Image 1 (cartoon, rainbow, N blue to C red):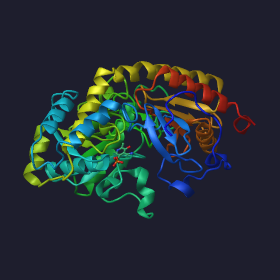
Image 2 (cartoon, protein in one colour):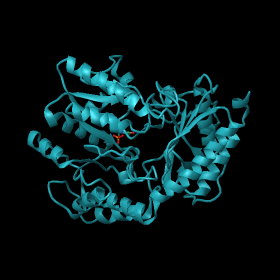
Image 3 (cartoon, rainbow, N blue to C red):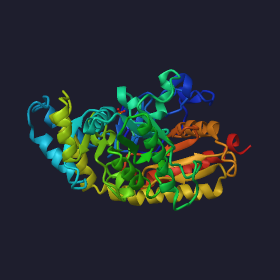
Image 4 (cartoon, rainbow, N blue to C red):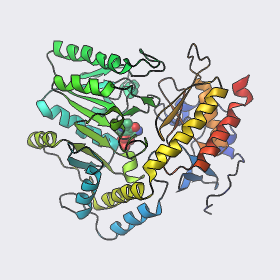
Length: 447
Ligand code: PMP
């Protein structure tokens, strides 16, 4: 039976009662970012909550896909209604396609004025890479260490997070990797105001290397906040400098907004706006359909034109009327329910709670991220920055036992990520902070 949101049961289920250990590689595959002992079998979602087969309710801090809340009634109704009227492919024009394109572009800088609809973040990035390579016929892509852009052909080659899946072949040909711009444990740390330009200077080296090999730069792809990399905020000025160098070398600049976009960062609708830049191509997915497959590439008109001249492109399901009806409903809900403002205000409240925990628990080395895109990096010693990976997994498992789902990530597996549906309220934040507080006092972590 469906349990409507009310008090959380805290009894453990059989699946929860196993020994807490690192089983990330055994049960779920190395690349999945939820390091639980046992898979969670869910049956239903509602607002910021998920329910498992046993009727247990969980607060979901993982799900940046169910952006406006699981099964939001207006989103569900929009899809159901369109499903009963028409759903066929994009060889035809349909009012939902044009309307969604217009509504999407209204959230973007005016320079970005062409939309291609696809079905997943990987497809969006595939298309973006093809556009960049078609632009001047250049070959080489520059990508960021521990970046992640998807699971398909060309995008794996720019997802250094995934290079271990290449059978030990290392960095693929025609790809150059620049250091992760991490100011907590990277090459340039702390509040150095020059960190952005120092990190961007590494693009000079790789652009030279590409030139020496008689090739040229097709483009630079970067998440506006690196999520698999451990919720890494880009230092101020990083993208501005990097874009300048890439454009001077004849390449295009791609902002991957698959995780970050649609108001999650609170102060802006898009993550790239935090850096004060306008990309040549923006890719988006996850939150766009609130769980339904819907993704897009938005680009400058000259880029779209060059691509159309050089390449035949067709995507069977991209922009189907049902997906677009859902996408329109998502944008409407974000706007009418003030969810971007909520990400700003309740996100600040969340951050405050996390910073207070950091003051009390040595293990919290760093708290970072804007709005509802927070990361907590756990360390054994704040001076040595020794990663507390086992402890991170322990906390995620204990939180699940206590009714809260959290994901863990980062190259050292020591970052707890908080990227909930952006309808999260103060009540949910209080529950999260209080439960984290309780778990952080447990013997496993303190002795
Ligand atoms: N880009 C980023 C930044 C992502 O996080 C992901 C998915 N985690 C993708 C692209 C790929 O999206 P999808 O899984 O929809 O193909």
